[in-house]
Image: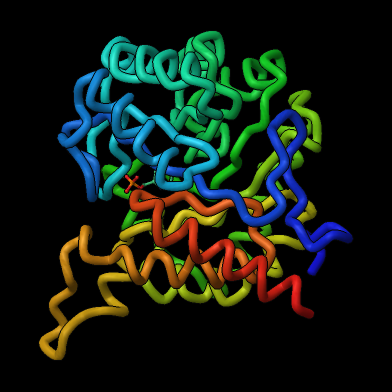
Length: 289
Ligand code: PMM
């Protein structure tokens, strides 16, 4: 597998700690309306406390976001996003947590990094805000380039593919080229298939079945399957009814094991404990080869 180093650990981005296995990124959504945890950590103290709990459960990094990207969500304004995100980033960073900021806005990325964030996670891969590539290049932090075809309001209408794997790979390659030309160092770029973003369940599953094609782009890979709709589809009962998002954590951990086995650098999850076990099992199995 191209992403594995000689010692069996996945290749990681420059500028972050190295873990000797797939890293676990815990999610803190400081939003009233996120898909699976909206409204639960909407004030700063509750969000910081939750981030610390995720670390105690085994998170290596904590991803802090202030804008819901659930299908159909409308955008939050910039001041409100800053108000939600920056104090939580500062609070967690001051406790020594490796913090990532989940934002599509350059201004939020910049202020979050000033407040201690070590990684910028942009679900638009630098497309939503034309200032993002330049700002990230100047900040010199790792940058997650997720596959994205447009804002959440109408992204489901863009879930049209003849061959989802080759199209996602080609579109990510195009983004990587543009970001490299924009001055971001190659070792800072992380790729992410963007499960659920302009994708139906069959697209998400095909991408998970071909993580090696994404890894062949030559950058560390982040996989964020946690509680997503495709898992609801996989777990649906006989009448086709999916379990609620918060009952998809065992399935999420199964994806974490598969992603770790395929050489992913990190998995992004809401419930950390089971995934922390899953990535350790994957490491142990890889070490027994
Ligand atoms: N998905 C969500 C939010 N942020 N970031 C990355 N890099 N990849 C993703 O797939 C991704 C993300 C939406 O999930 P949530 O609202 O349930 O946290």
